Length: 402
Image (cartoon, rainbow, N blue to C red; front, side, top):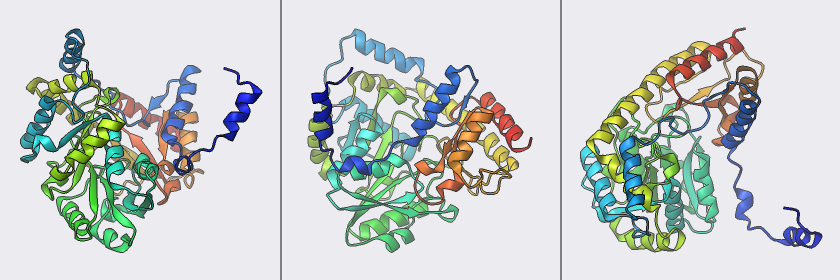
């Protein structure tokens, strides 16, 4: 549509809110666009960029959605979510974690992103600082910025499993600090906090009267140990979870929060006004996720993700990438390129583009994830078929060892 000169002048006169300038583009999507252009030109591109399972919802889940549609069960639900779904999620915590979580504390949301937005809307005021590790999922800092807060990215290292530690909390906590936002397992590193590390961090935050928001959306994809929820540490912790990753329902936009009982009315009020409710059909479909049939499928897929990780990490190390900590969850490898014999080893953006253009493998440069040596790091996603990962490694070998 072509704007008239008057309309163009009006558009230029609009004053954007300052928060817009604090939010950067999501660069992984720029890499996705570049890969898409190559595909449209006829090239075979192997995508190891997007954090989206290559699996989709099992048939039993799809059937539950179709039954809801055919039955006309598509009206708004309670803003906190379907009672039956909240009870099913509570039962899942009991089965997996041995935790007794009152369904009344569970808030079903339009994806984990909506859950994080609700949490920040409830807890972050203008000028509040929120600590998070660097590297971390880029949208986390933007959620804080959207409500006038100041994300404080704390440089982390392999010594801390790229996580926020209690020592970090003590060092970086200021008079303006309101709380922390962490993820375990993490995007982009795929590393989890140990139970001891998690407890110490939560205790350090609580001792200072702050909040702890823990993103656990990848917790179902844990490989080397039984996952431990932050809810086992303190019932004042707010956890975020999702049906996108372990349950393979990315586009269904469904997640949940577990919040302290006294905050439920606050989150309900915010959800009513900001979202009304999570997608109704997706909620009815998600009930099928907790059936024995569906859970068996999800566990089989989790083992397949582990098989991919167990191949990819040693293969990358053999090629010269440095992966100092074995990722124990999610489907990411955060690799250091500084030791590679390659002219772009000090520029992850240029290196990633070279890999895409010459090897037709899409990966993500580290500058999406923070400010702690991003030019030295790239992220690989192994949410693609095993055979394609093997082929991608072969292409990388040709590029790095011609």
